[in-house]
Image (cartoon, rainbow, N blue to C red; front, side):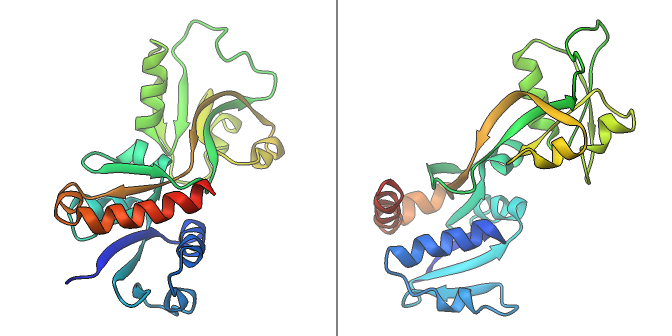
Length: 210
């Protein structure tokens, strides 16, 4: 039997997920001491961990080369299409928020707003729900620069503590939606490996709820 293959988002979500697997009894030393390896067995080899960037976790799960994945809700909302979101793992908590320069009346004018963001799909849906037409500019780096250099009226970005915003004279004016790590599954894997996946989900779920 092929091991159950799980794609993990490298970095903090990877570390938090591995802690969770250790709590439910899996030997995860291979991942803790991984060196440069990207595919690693845990437990007795019945699970294989694949370390990847967030967007690639979704790609691997959608294409069925990984059965399950752990990825932030931010990436799911921006890039996700054909997979099942199984449950909220309860860590990696932050939020999408709309922010602008301190004291600015964002909704006061009549012209269409320009919003800078790394997440155009999330931003578009947020303003569509408000029946507002906005111009969206995608930025890859520090989104906070948008309003400061006159590129945009505001930004939509991930906010954890808000300290970066404050240091740059910006403030949150509205929360867009909460974010946390989610367990996702390939559609076919969920049918073909139902028992294995359900057993693992049950163990994880009990630990998360504990």
